[in-house]
Image (cartoon, rainbow, N blue to C red):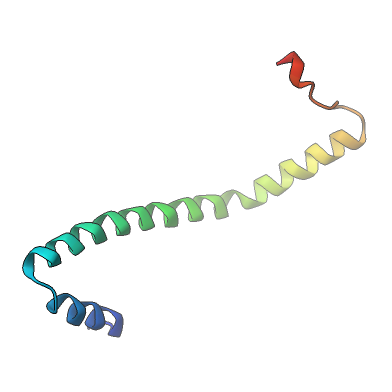
Length: 76
């Protein structure tokens, strides 16, 4: 079954000339591909969230214990 959103898009597309419809479809292809990439990155980031928190806590602990020192940008 087609969602209400898809029906709306379909009706909007029907009002456009064929050439314009093709341009919109091409634009949507790029937009959807980019959106799918974003969803993938969000999913990957979410899966690593616990590890990132663990490493951040570890780093804070090492800083408290004096195992690290401020970065000297002149030494890079």
